[in-house]
Image 1 (cartoon, rainbow, N blue to C red):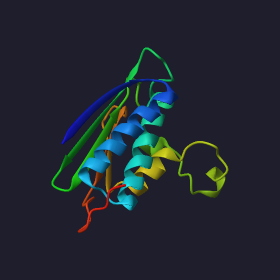
Image 2 (cartoon, rainbow, N blue to C red):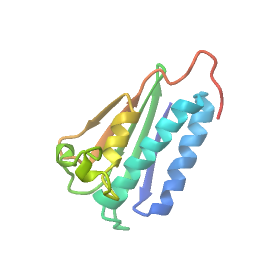
Image 3 (cartoon, helix red, strand yellow):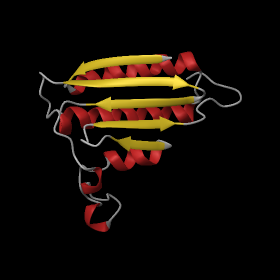
Length: 140
């Protein structure tokens, strides 16, 4: 199963992405724990793409590709921004960063997905979620 979504760089469009994920998750039969990981990670990546990547420029798009095969789900989020170096993002768990209002997105995605990979430019992230359907799949 494969879904492609393109949205404008408006925070309100997160709801479009959430609806597509909800529909796909229900169709596949993913359990609640994996649903939460996938939803939070994907919405965080799209939010970052809108705000940090595309600078909320309504003329720029965010592309989301969702691919399910062999009990694994891959989500790729790509923006039209200049990109960034993930290694430059401060660790939000360090005492000097604990009270920062932003800077937790990459940390969240890295801890919720089984694998996370950024492209060289830093404007695209692919998150992989493995073994997402339990023995007795439950719909959301």
